[in-house]
Length: 297
Image (cartoon, rainbow, N blue to C red):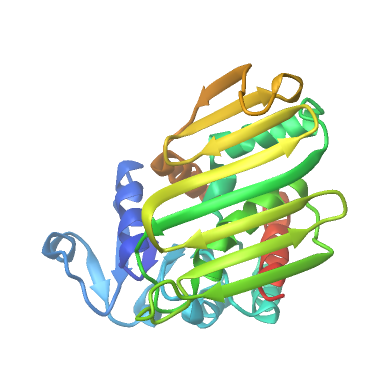
């Protein structure tokens, strides 16, 4: 039996593999129908059928519509599963996978990578400490030119990140949700853009996402009672502005914090998977199921 299996070596699968190598992992087998990189073909054993793989940990980075079948297979064998988000598109399927993991005394880990981002974790710590005051509103922009997805639309591909962040930070379910999926590019196979409005008891969140946009924008603005926080994931900066010092149109009193890289967040995610506890799985299970519920509204 091998230690690690990777199912799917596309865009995200290759990133997972590179980070596993950086962590010193070598006992890896791969399943993909087409290995484009010959050096990978020479270095690792690979299979065309995932059922031929026997491993302790498996990383599933295949199209979302295949997640339930593949996760179900490995969980049934007691394998620890790391799955690319979203876990499934159907809530009942995700619930069944968590039940199966519990039944077979194993774990299933959904890769909500931004919940491992150092800036998002700092926001959570400062919010829980009372430093920021109550949340009043959130504006989130996640825009880029590609990569295009062919299995899910922009809501599931991009807005899912932002919904998971909100669930991680505030653990509150919205009382009203509105989505508008549309195509900026008429030739897109799936809706490449989404607008979302999430209305909570005491705050609102506005989401604007697209993979067909001429500029790369990764910015979230959190308006709290005591601070206005601007998180720019592209520039890797978190800016705090004291609410008492904000005057239109000039802002003052800024405090900037550097952030870990996207790759470092993924390393943290992978390391957490290897040491995942039952308590952590329950916490992540809530984020996963609530996020899927919201995306389906």
